[in-house]
Image (cartoon, rainbow, N blue to C red; front, top):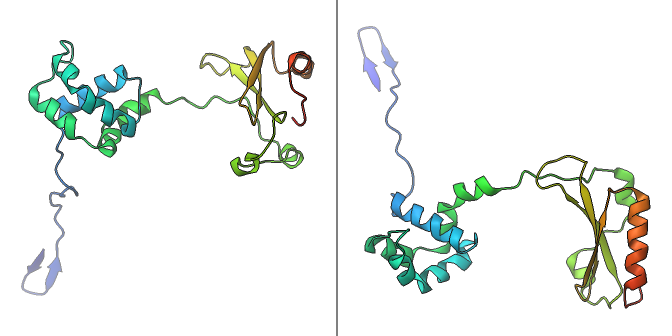
Length: 191
Protein backbone atom coordinates (compact mmCIF):
# COMPACT_ATOMS: atom_id res chain seq x y z
CA UNK A 1 0.00 0.00 0.00
CA UNK A 2 1.41 3.39 -0.94
CA UNK A 3 0.74 6.27 1.40
CA UNK A 4 1.24 9.80 0.12
CA UNK A 5 2.01 12.71 2.39
CA UNK A 6 3.43 16.21 2.42
CA UNK A 7 7.16 15.59 2.00
CA UNK A 8 7.18 12.26 0.18
CA UNK A 9 5.67 8.94 -0.49
CA UNK A 10 6.29 5.88 1.62
CA UNK A 11 5.50 2.23 1.16
CA UNK A 12 3.62 0.44 3.95
CA UNK A 13 3.27 -3.35 3.86
CA UNK A 14 0.21 -4.91 5.39
CA UNK A 15 -0.17 -8.59 6.13
CA UNK A 16 -3.14 -9.89 4.21
CA UNK A 17 -5.00 -13.17 4.32
CA UNK A 18 -3.06 -15.73 2.36
CA UNK A 19 -5.17 -17.74 -0.02
CA UNK A 20 -4.42 -21.46 -0.11
CA UNK A 21 -3.71 -22.92 -3.52
CA UNK A 22 -5.51 -25.68 -5.29
CA UNK A 23 -9.09 -26.81 -5.29
CA UNK A 24 -11.17 -26.95 -2.15
CA UNK A 25 -11.27 -30.39 -0.51
CA UNK A 26 -14.00 -32.71 -1.77
CA UNK A 27 -13.74 -35.44 0.86
CA UNK A 28 -14.50 -34.48 4.44
CA UNK A 29 -13.65 -36.01 7.79
CA UNK A 30 -16.47 -38.59 7.55
CA UNK A 31 -15.09 -40.00 4.31
CA UNK A 32 -11.54 -40.01 5.66
CA UNK A 33 -12.48 -41.86 8.87
CA UNK A 34 -14.50 -44.44 6.89
CA UNK A 35 -11.57 -44.82 4.49
CA UNK A 36 -9.11 -45.38 7.35
CA UNK A 37 -11.37 -48.05 8.85
CA UNK A 38 -11.77 -49.84 5.51
CA UNK A 39 -8.02 -49.55 4.87
CA UNK A 40 -7.27 -51.26 8.20
CA UNK A 41 -9.82 -54.02 7.55
CA UNK A 42 -8.35 -54.78 4.12
CA UNK A 43 -4.83 -55.11 5.50
CA UNK A 44 -3.27 -51.67 4.88
CA UNK A 45 -3.27 -51.85 1.07
CA UNK A 46 -2.02 -49.10 -1.23
CA UNK A 47 -4.52 -46.87 -3.05
CA UNK A 48 -4.24 -48.74 -6.36
CA UNK A 49 -5.28 -52.00 -4.74
CA UNK A 50 -7.73 -50.54 -2.25
CA UNK A 51 -9.85 -48.53 -4.74
CA UNK A 52 -11.21 -51.55 -6.66
CA UNK A 53 -11.87 -53.43 -3.42
CA UNK A 54 -13.89 -50.51 -2.06
CA UNK A 55 -15.93 -50.37 -5.26
CA UNK A 56 -16.63 -54.11 -5.11
CA UNK A 57 -17.60 -54.10 -1.44
CA UNK A 58 -19.43 -50.78 -1.03
CA UNK A 59 -22.66 -52.63 -0.19
CA UNK A 60 -20.94 -54.40 2.70
CA UNK A 61 -19.43 -51.08 3.82
CA UNK A 62 -22.88 -49.49 3.79
CA UNK A 63 -24.37 -52.39 5.77
CA UNK A 64 -21.57 -52.51 8.36
CA UNK A 65 -23.00 -51.48 11.73
CA UNK A 66 -19.63 -50.36 13.09
CA UNK A 67 -18.78 -48.09 10.17
CA UNK A 68 -22.25 -46.59 10.10
CA UNK A 69 -21.45 -45.01 6.73
CA UNK A 70 -24.13 -42.78 5.25
CA UNK A 71 -25.18 -43.00 1.60
CA UNK A 72 -23.22 -39.84 0.69
CA UNK A 73 -20.04 -41.26 2.23
CA UNK A 74 -20.48 -44.52 0.31
CA UNK A 75 -21.08 -42.60 -2.92
CA UNK A 76 -17.87 -40.66 -2.39
CA UNK A 77 -15.95 -43.86 -1.62
CA UNK A 78 -17.22 -45.30 -4.91
CA UNK A 79 -15.60 -42.53 -6.95
CA UNK A 80 -12.45 -41.80 -4.94
CA UNK A 81 -9.24 -42.18 -6.93
CA UNK A 82 -6.21 -44.24 -5.83
CA UNK A 83 -4.06 -41.10 -5.59
CA UNK A 84 -6.62 -39.44 -3.33
CA UNK A 85 -6.78 -42.56 -1.17
CA UNK A 86 -3.01 -42.45 -0.71
CA UNK A 87 -3.14 -38.72 0.06
CA UNK A 88 -5.91 -39.13 2.66
CA UNK A 89 -4.11 -42.07 4.30
CA UNK A 90 -0.70 -40.38 4.40
CA UNK A 91 -0.95 -39.31 8.05
CA UNK A 92 -2.16 -42.77 9.14
CA UNK A 93 0.65 -44.48 7.21
CA UNK A 94 3.25 -42.27 8.84
CA UNK A 95 2.11 -43.51 12.26
CA UNK A 96 2.91 -47.09 11.20
CA UNK A 97 6.32 -46.35 9.66
CA UNK A 98 9.19 -48.34 11.09
CA UNK A 99 11.99 -46.39 12.66
CA UNK A 100 14.70 -48.07 10.61
CA UNK A 101 16.53 -50.35 13.05
CA UNK A 102 19.50 -51.80 11.26
CA UNK A 103 22.42 -53.86 12.42
CA UNK A 104 24.42 -53.13 9.29
CA UNK A 105 27.33 -50.76 9.73
CA UNK A 106 29.06 -48.89 6.93
CA UNK A 107 32.45 -50.27 6.02
CA UNK A 108 34.23 -48.78 3.02
CA UNK A 109 36.57 -51.73 2.52
CA UNK A 110 33.75 -54.25 2.62
CA UNK A 111 31.90 -52.55 -0.24
CA UNK A 112 34.94 -53.01 -2.47
CA UNK A 113 35.20 -56.75 -1.68
CA UNK A 114 31.58 -57.68 -2.37
CA UNK A 115 30.38 -57.33 -5.97
CA UNK A 116 26.99 -55.63 -6.17
CA UNK A 117 24.60 -57.02 -8.75
CA UNK A 118 21.41 -55.34 -9.86
CA UNK A 119 18.13 -57.07 -10.69
CA UNK A 120 19.01 -57.36 -14.39
CA UNK A 121 22.28 -59.16 -13.60
CA UNK A 122 20.29 -62.08 -12.13
CA UNK A 123 17.99 -62.54 -15.16
CA UNK A 124 19.44 -65.84 -16.47
CA UNK A 125 21.10 -67.37 -13.43
CA UNK A 126 20.69 -71.15 -12.98
CA UNK A 127 19.78 -72.71 -9.63
CA UNK A 128 22.60 -72.89 -7.10
CA UNK A 129 23.46 -69.20 -6.91
CA UNK A 130 22.52 -68.02 -3.42
CA UNK A 131 22.29 -64.75 -1.53
CA UNK A 132 22.81 -64.64 2.22
CA UNK A 133 21.78 -62.15 4.89
CA UNK A 134 21.23 -61.98 8.63
CA UNK A 135 18.06 -60.55 10.11
CA UNK A 136 17.78 -59.26 13.68
CA UNK A 137 14.74 -60.50 15.58
CA UNK A 138 14.57 -57.66 18.06
CA UNK A 139 10.83 -57.00 17.99
CA UNK A 140 11.35 -53.33 17.14
CA UNK A 141 13.72 -52.60 20.01
CA UNK A 142 17.15 -51.65 18.69
CA UNK A 143 19.32 -53.67 21.05
CA UNK A 144 22.05 -56.07 20.03
CA UNK A 145 20.83 -58.60 22.63
CA UNK A 146 18.53 -60.52 20.34
CA UNK A 147 18.48 -63.64 18.23
CA UNK A 148 19.31 -63.43 14.54
CA UNK A 149 18.21 -65.45 11.54
CA UNK A 150 20.54 -66.49 8.75
CA UNK A 151 18.61 -66.40 5.47
CA UNK A 152 19.86 -68.09 2.30
CA UNK A 153 17.83 -67.57 -0.86
CA UNK A 154 18.37 -69.23 -4.24
CA UNK A 155 18.25 -66.48 -6.89
CA UNK A 156 16.61 -68.59 -9.59
CA UNK A 157 14.14 -70.62 -7.55
CA UNK A 158 13.41 -68.21 -4.72
CA UNK A 159 13.89 -71.15 -2.36
CA UNK A 160 14.78 -69.87 1.09
CA UNK A 161 16.43 -71.69 3.97
CA UNK A 162 16.68 -70.12 7.43
CA UNK A 163 18.53 -70.96 10.61
CA UNK A 164 18.43 -69.24 13.98
CA UNK A 165 21.61 -67.72 15.40
CA UNK A 166 22.50 -66.73 18.96
CA UNK A 167 24.21 -63.65 17.52
CA UNK A 168 26.12 -62.71 14.38
CA UNK A 169 29.44 -64.10 15.49
CA UNK A 170 31.32 -65.86 12.70
CA UNK A 171 31.23 -69.22 14.48
CA UNK A 172 27.40 -69.30 14.54
CA UNK A 173 27.06 -68.09 10.95
CA UNK A 174 29.58 -70.67 9.65
CA UNK A 175 27.94 -73.49 11.64
CA UNK A 176 24.45 -72.59 10.33
CA UNK A 177 25.80 -72.28 6.78
CA UNK A 178 27.39 -75.75 7.00
CA UNK A 179 24.12 -77.20 8.29
CA UNK A 180 22.13 -75.65 5.46
CA UNK A 181 24.64 -76.77 2.81
CA UNK A 182 24.56 -80.36 4.11
CA UNK A 183 20.77 -80.53 3.66
CA UNK A 184 20.48 -78.43 0.49
CA UNK A 185 19.47 -80.64 -2.48
CA UNK A 186 21.33 -78.58 -5.11
CA UNK A 187 25.00 -77.85 -5.67
CA UNK A 188 25.94 -74.47 -4.21
CA UNK A 189 27.68 -72.61 -7.06
CA UNK A 190 28.06 -69.13 -5.60
CA UNK A 191 27.20 -67.38 -2.37
